[in-house]
Each structure stands twice: as structure tokens, then as C-alpha cells.
Length: 405
Image (cartoon, rainbow, N blue to C red; front, side, top):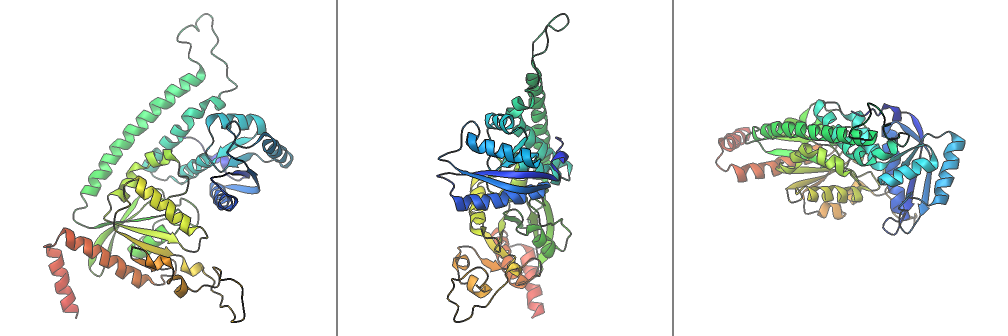
């Protein structure tokens, strides 16, 4: 696997562009997220650079004047890394490194770096390594600009491969090997999913860092790693959960993100299969995040891309404990804001009118937890009855209910 430790604890600057497709307020949101990504990777962001363009420059993404401005700043302040908010083409990456003379990263490379740091199991490391090599292959040119063709002469005649061509061949072979390895693991995991029998399968989905792992721990009483950083969870975790004598399987999956690298979608196919094959999706949303509506749209878009958007779903708006409700004085004419709208008022918004069952909770403090569990129970029971109308389990369940009365 590629070594990513060198990116830790570096000072960095961020660069983004305002275009016809991406207005200034949207860029600010993306840059905030990019800074969080950089922090998660171990970098300290000291400055942001933005530029308004009709469209990104095909050679250097930003204009030559802005590139010179960035170059002067990083040189004067000893900055070693410049991070761009969008994925750069191989030629843009090469031109920017030549122009600014420091390490250039784009959003995709940064996310891959975080995944490499977070991968704990052999399976996750294999997925990340595949994604890294797929990203690296078209960008090898910039890494070998100091090399010349192999020298000719006695003993050096032959195919005449350059070092870059040799490395491309090695990386292609490695990619093929990793794909075969993942196919084997995918088959094993598919068999495991098929062997889970008649139990209803549910999957937690949502944007990264919305509290899925915390919710998983609370529901399953397990100890899944949870942290207030992006992509704390990479490996799929499956736990058996029982609510009201009704058992089902709960899966915690990797979080989604806007501008998700295509390499990761391909390499994390098996993780996404857990979502595709689930009977019920529990869409967790961080309601305290200012861009939670965009997060919902991003998750729905990815669910559509993997053909999982028509599954039964429960909307769980998490982190209501992050609201600091401030009662407005009757003479206060200032507009309503996120700080002075109560939870009850939130529940009267469009979110509660969703076509899916909706609940507002705190996975951390377990507020409204019983209401959520009842909602999950009802949805799981519907699926179970529709699939196994004469299952002995249900008769036993109803007998238990009668006895409890």
C-alpha cells in the first residue's frame, strides 16, 4: 500500500473556484468540508484561496495570476501542501506542481489518504489500495519527470521500456491482482449474506460523520468504533439486534460524501452490496449540520446510482442534542434562525411530511430512542410478515404478546 503517513501534521492551504455551476455560498460549504477532510487527514489549514472563473482553467485549474499568488504565499510562509477542492486532471496536477513548486493534492487524493489511514482490516486495506492505484495510474507522468529513457549501449539493448512504462505495467498487474482478490472476498461475503437466513436485514446509510456508528452501538449494545471525524468507519459491521422479541440484522456501512471518488465506489462494491441487498434502509441525517439537506440529496443520489433508492426507508434525524434552543423574546423581530427554532417546530417542517417514517433523536443521549425503536420494529415486522406470513416465529411472537397482556 502507498505510504500516506507523510501527509500528517502538515500546514496546508485550500484552493477552490466559483463557477457558473458552483456559486460562492456553495463553494464556502465545500471548502468547510474540505477543511474538515484536511483536519481528519492530519493537516492544519492556514489559508483559503478562491477565484471566480467561468470554468476551471484546463491547464492549471486556476488562473496564472492566482497560481502565482498561491506560490508566493506558500513560499513566504513555508507551506508544504496545497489542496484543491475538485479532482485535478493529470496535466493540471503536473502543471500546478511545476508552477507552485510544492506538493499538490486534490479532493480525491485527500479522501483516498484518509481511507488509507482508516483502513484496519485486510479487506479494507485491499479496497483502498485498489482505489489508490486506479487514481495513480494516469498520474504517473508527473512522478517521473526527473527520469530519462534507459541508456542504450552494450548490455542495454532490448524492449526499450522507459521507467514510467515499466511502472505502468507493474501497477496494471497489481490492479488486476487486487481486483481478483476482491472478487474472491466478494464471493465469500455474498455467501455470508445468503447464509443469514430468514432474518430481516437493515442497513444504516447516510453522509459521513452523522452518527451511524454511535447509533449502531446504542441499538446493538456493541462497541463499534465511533469518532467525530470523517470516515471513522470503513469496514462493514453486522450485528444482531432484538426489539420487542423481533430479531433483525443491522449493518453499519461507510459514510457517503459529496464528490465521492469513482475509484472508491468501484473498490467498495461489496460494502455497497450490503446496502443493495438490505431489506430496510435507515437513513441517518445530522440535523445540526447547516448543509443537511444537501447531504440528504447526496446520499439519495448515490442510492439511486447503486439501484437502492426504492427500498423501504426510515429517516432518522440525529444530533438534536446539538441544538442550543434560545427562546425569542416577544418583542424580538429578528428572523428565525437555527438557534431559536425548537425541536417541536422542526417536527412541523417538511421533514416530518416525508414519504418515509421520520423520527428526531439523539444517538448520544438516546433522546426519543423509544419512538425510533418502535418505528424500526413496525417496519421490520411488516417486511417479516410479507415475506414469511406463516412463519412459526410470528405465532410464537403473538403468543408471547398475549401472555404479556
